[in-house]
Image (cartoon, rainbow, N blue to C red; front, side, top):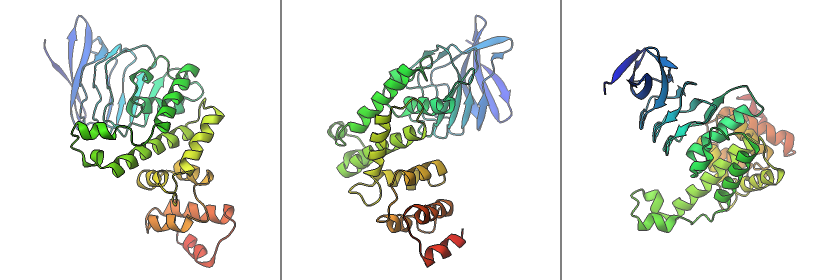
Length: 302
């Protein structure tokens, strides 16, 4: 069957037509943003083929058309820079592991009338596609419903409560080549970091979240802050979110920054991240009940 090319500004879209319907096969070039058209040469775009955008390293934003009916397996897998996807909010035939290995994906926005919680649903749906290891959670038709949120939270709690050592022996016995997967301390550290990422994400997107779950997530982050026996909540913040005010303000408000660990937190930050450092210094003055001459000098620098 003939393959065609639709020329774009920074590349091209590969496609084929069969019986008046178009399947997108992939792209070429260094496209950062791509809006797949609703039709090509008068035919509706109804399918994204298997592995169509597999390992597209440049792609950051992708918008899919309302005419879409089917998405093949691994269509957007291992897109290392993909951050945002727009999809039609309707029942679609979906393959497996659509976003496998696309770890930066932060938002899958579903377009329709703007209901309450649209941005939060987009963040939770992206996590369902990349972090939750449960294909049933990636449901376009159910996303945002009370039942879907209940399932999302239930799966999150399974992950959060699972002992950190679970899965380690399997990695060793199956001969995982990744050293981090066969070193016990590194394995359990990464498990706790994954849990901290989910806790941060849900607390920052609390749409439909029960109070008892909120309290459990807050307690988890406080129990893994700087100065605790394990510090993964602080590590995730320091390594991944120091330029994001919602993350470090939440961290402080939850009581993860204390008079006892404040100096150690600043020491870890070294000379980097001036905005976060200035925020924490103000937080210390306003909420921890004291300041000093050297802190005042430091604040003047930012």
